[in-house]
Image 1 (spheres, rainbow, N blue to C red):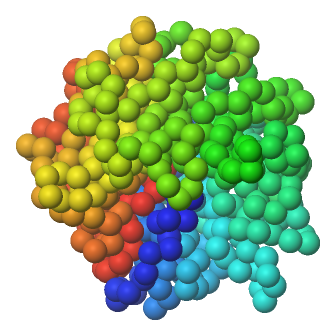
Image 2 (spheres, rainbow, N blue to C red):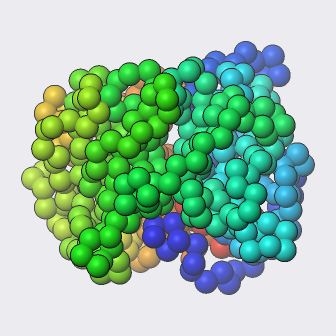
Length: 481
């Protein structure tokens, strides 16, 4: 599976020690909470969390950490940042080899105080000397940014199989409070912590959903969004479904409502997804990415990957025929070739302020000449017709104005995030290349203008810029905000 592919590479490089909290101008102590999604310090600007899950902390290879960069009126400012690991004061746990702290992230205001909180699914954390693995750490937002944290009480005391394998937040029952969904690879596979969640880590309630029993699809990846335009958040669950003795990737929409999440229709599967209103009709549209091509089964993928758009409606999934887009689709840059990994990562946001959600697509396996897996990012434009190839643009490290030089196996586009960090109504692009510099990793910041994302004025940085350890860390492997 996508994240497992990332975290099973050999860990060989040495790294410097990272310890306590680094906080430089994250926000004024007097700042009032904005209530803005993704705003950890309540100053009215969205921030971003950048995972470095294989970073060495306290000498422990693969312990992992998260760097938080705060938004300002000029955009994301790397001088205003926080480093968070299990060695940080106020964060539960201790760094251990192969914990991969940070390789599952989401955000949401779990305690209802107006500040966005950071949720870390530490699925590889061993529980004592047992055979159970996984915990969920909530790092609380506040006027000074992210600081103290709590581990949530496990819903299943008897057994946890990589609990926190994926996490997502939303108001799934429409009561005005943020809930947290978490994947536990043991049954029941999906656990819902009903909000609010107290600073002591106690949820208002716990619900278990066995997605395999209900739908025939195991819970692997979960994505929250509002598909039918009502007052409750819906949840897309993606995983594997058995068909004719083989397993193929598939998705199912769980519609939110006053009685909680209920299984609805199925959609094209994949290993990445995002939800955004690409046709501006008031309903969220589901975009799934299968970097191994639609209906492909592991381990043999198709030509180059595909994304599929399943449109939303007042009833949930629209009767409109889903649209499949590849690099062979008209006006999409490049051509579909096996191993391109078109759809490895996805993010939705309005890049030019026209009210239509656009979609950034990571093409992390794209070859540039003889440089295999150098990687690119393609931005598909939303319109009244929906998501199409018209107006799409592709960027790489070889694009004029973009820092760096494309190299084989960088995997630029391994992560993407569209976010409006400077509050101008246009989403900028954040792109990660976790394999850059032999796995040290780097992140690129692209600005957005009247015509959308532009390479002009783009910048890049790695772990050293934000005070992180050198060496193998997969900095930029996961982005959240």
